[in-house]
Image (cartoon, rainbow, N blue to C red; front, top):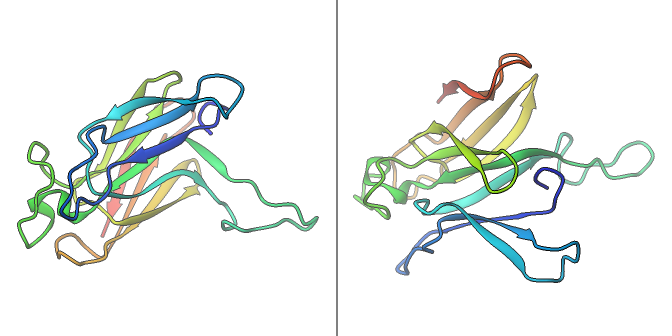
Length: 179
């Protein structure tokens, strides 16, 4: 869900001898109230490569949690998407010299906040990348933990980022990073 509407985020995955998906990071939205009609593709950022996982929601009690009445606990949508590039995306993130996008330094972990319509703002959390990440609410902030698979060496096995407003009057900002 994004601004109350269903969406699908998609990103260019590992190349592994193939070519990158030229659109990088996109969102698909239904064009009509009928979701069986072709959805509209909107490009968010074409420079993203080697994305393994996208996060657009938080499961406060786990993905398959149920309340005392037996109803599923619904996720909290983060009104955007968190994207992490793996270490083969840039030679600065691995020891093998792999570089799947020559025009970008580092392997980005980014939160793209939606502002409605087709407008997104990128909040860069790290240039060290991650393979898998999970996001939880931590007070009024988002806490993101990222794990590296260490296939190509490079960035730390486990990283942690905290971002969000310091209070209800401020916009999003990067708050902390831990390795």
